[in-house]
Image (cartoon, rainbow, N blue to C red; front, side, top):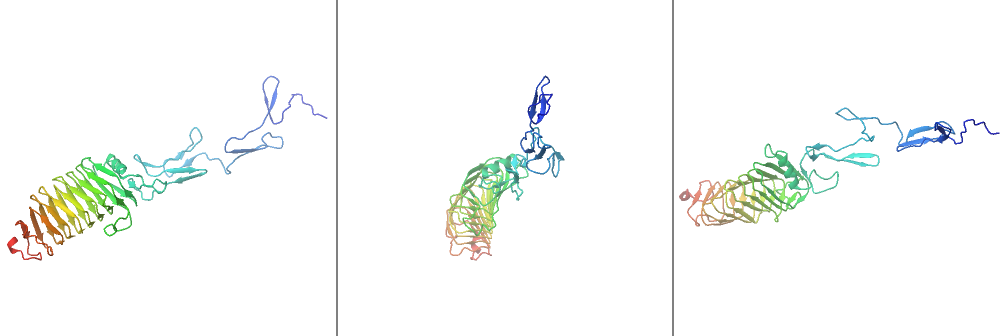
Length: 347
């Protein structure tokens, strides 16, 4: 026996009436992230659930900033934090997981040539880090840029006035004793502005060059240096401290190169144009060359190199110079009693 159907309903499911004469059966259909059991209701009540399990997420709350609500597409957008225009960390989404990039060093300027997320620095080149540091105000209070275990083979010129930038190698070693170990600089660096560039704990290879043509300076601390060094501005300086310098060529045509508690085991330093070369508490086996009103000062220093200077003044105080004969070269010698030579006639 067929049941009476006065409404002329012929389709299973929930009924939809068109307002005239037709009924149509409808079935609940799941969208993204939802499952529906018994969608047409024939076998029982429909059951609607989230496909991932658990309850619906209505909002998120951060450590600060209050409640976060989804956007018009019901999305929560997780972006990496920026420090100015510098990415402090990125978020990486995959499947159902959001990972936050490791930025455990907590510094704005970290140079690492790696491009691997989680291992990279905030910059892959030293030039990019310097450019941003200057834009962020390194002409005022200065900035510190850290170089991780990378080899930097860039050609860099800093020409901005009054820049003060510290460039620090982060390797866990003493660069004055380890030659050729990262961070390693193999490129060319020129300071042509009026600021100061300070390098520390970095190895400079024999292919590298450092030039200060500015009224500021280049400072090299706790480093191993094979780079060619050039100081040309009469008001500028290169300062070397607690470092080992085996540069084959040092050219000093203006200003001053000073070193303290450092070693110079080889190479030639050529002086001209009233330039000054000062060694304090150091040792050197270099060749001194050039002349023209130059000034050389050795203070508590051992010099075992070669003197080929043709003019200028050499001041020796508390220093020893082995078999090197400064006195037969020319008369402009200032040798004080506490040096290891008889020098009363040269005061």
